[in-house]
Amino acid sequence: MTVSSAPGKLYLFGEHAVVYGEPAIACAVDRRVTATVERRDDDRLRVRAPDLRLDSFAAEFGERADGGVAVDADEGAVAAALGYVRGAVESAYDHVGERAGLDVTVESDLPLGAGLSSSAAVVVATLHAAVRAMDGDIREETLAERAYRVESDVQDGDASRMDTYCTTVGGAVRVEGEEGERLEAPELPLAVGYDGGSGNTGELVADVRELKETYGFAADTVGAIGDIVRAGRPAVESGDLDEVGRLMDFDHGLLSALGVSARSLDEMVWAAREGGAAGAKLTGAGGGGCVVALDPEGTALRALELAPACEEAFAAPLDREGVRAE
Ligand code: PMV
Image (tube, rainbow, N blue to C red; front, top):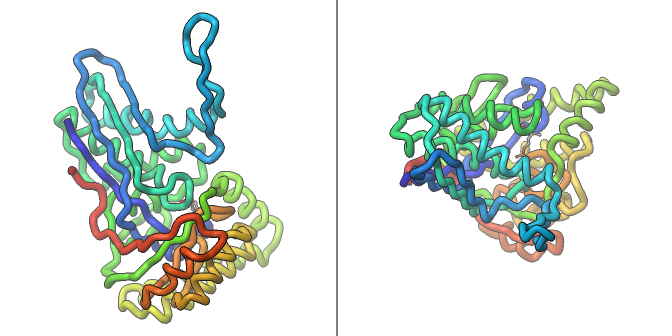
């Protein structure tokens, strides 16, 4: 039996703009998806994923006339959730050149579909554990690239390399186009607020694309987000928390202008700021899900916990380790 885990991540700067080749900076957070893989005696693949719920997915089980079980669920959502696991296993088969029967169990202590890259962590952890279960080896760059291809197949286009890269290597990372690099960052006191919901990444990305193609000033806004990332890099590397916070606030304003914030996200951002955050912004695709606050005094976390829009808040220190064998 092999067990691998991979961390979630949050965007410090640059989501959405990264889709158009601008740079972005993200941090791995110390909440993980764990995949356990065991070889079977036959050649079947069995997947258990008790935490793989999507917001739009509610299953109702009932008995069918023929004695089988009918599942009333959004089949597209179920197929997408399982698609990540199946895609990861197929990629592992391709990598080791063997198709062994496997039992795969995926568990998550990340909120799912909320902008913390749970799907990338599922793919990376499953691929890593499945390769090892078949006595194979995989290098970080190969794992990140394979995981990226699985994610973009399941999501059908328009995904950046950030999620799978950051989840694979851990720490603070910068991605621009096909290039990823780790940044030497000191400790960043981050806190996350989660509204209990999620946005539709595909739709939000498509909306921003349309805006950008319609208005020159929307295209300029995307470029300005890239400028924030360029200014943010030295601030992150030198641990200038005031500057990082100021740039996070600015980034949230530009993301709002592009239409990807939500009332719940704005409420949590303001609660965090009023609670003493050095800066706060939505993280990920937006529309709902999570905000990230830079919380040097530890007071913004409490403010987030008390915010009516916030269902769950937690400290999210940087996780310097990416995927690992447990
Ligand atoms: O919500 P998430 O974690 O899937 O982040 C999406 C971030 C985007 O920049 C909007 C898309 C991408 O693939 O980078």
